[in-house]
Picture (tube, rainbow, N blue to C red):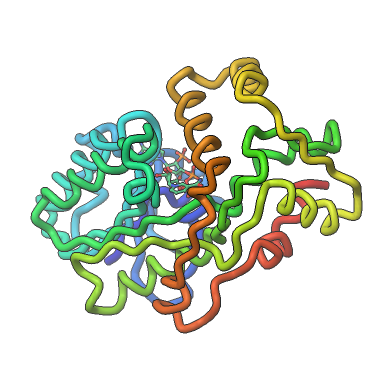
Length: 282
Ligand SMILES: NC(=O)c1ccc[n+]([C@@H]2O[C@H](COP(=O)([O-])OP(=O)(O)OC[C@H]3O[C@@H](n4cnc5c(N)ncnc54)[C@H](OP(=O)(O)O)[C@@H]3O)[C@@H](O)[C@H]2O)c1
């Protein structure tokens, strides 16, 4: 039995889907089973919350392997709770979704969160594999609102490039390392196949929807104001601005070949991702 967390999100939902396609016995740990929709009918579903240790024993009972991801402002706490429950249940292998910031910018808030969470998983004594992706292609869904309402994207990243990775590729790597041997004790930095600036991604979205979309390179202060208006907590605003500054400085442009090496096929491009998500911007 393989346990999947984050199953209502970008990567976890794809992990769940691909494990089902691969004929694996799968259980989803979710806070709200109703959010799983159709997918919930194809797998075992257990209600649980990584922030509430008392809900985890039932979720981990009988589990051999687990795909774990942690979000929010205390990743280490969630990771410690999951590690504890996994250990109690006799889980043999944990595959954790982390972040490339652990390697590229461990001093940044996002990097620190993931460094601390990785440490909890490694300290569990269980076999682990860590996936460290860079920026997700799905982050551009955050632009959908301003593209629809103002025909523009506002972001303080200048000409800085990122190498957006399709969450389906992260999921495919997760499935590969979950169901084939030899990945224990390894960390894999994962990126998309091409480095693109925000303006280049916006141009691709514009072409996909057949409407003009402008990219506006705003100041950090303007970006902060927008996030404050949107009600984001200060800690997240600072973390996001740090990530934007990292991209602007050129650190997001690094490309690895790891997806292709592990899967034996080319990583999906941003255009590939757009083919199945373009509607979100219309
Ligand atoms: N976006 C990027 O560019 C990027 C890059 C590198 C690494 N990452 C990392 O990738 C992870 C996010 O992956 P994602 O985009 O697939 O996630 P996502 O779409 O943001 O979804 C988060 C998932 O986690 C679940 N969740 C949140 N808190 C939980 C809790 N206390 N207990 C159980 N489940 C909980 C959510 O469930 P609900 O439906 O109940 O909310 C949801 O299924 C984060 O660790 C992030 O730092 C992201």
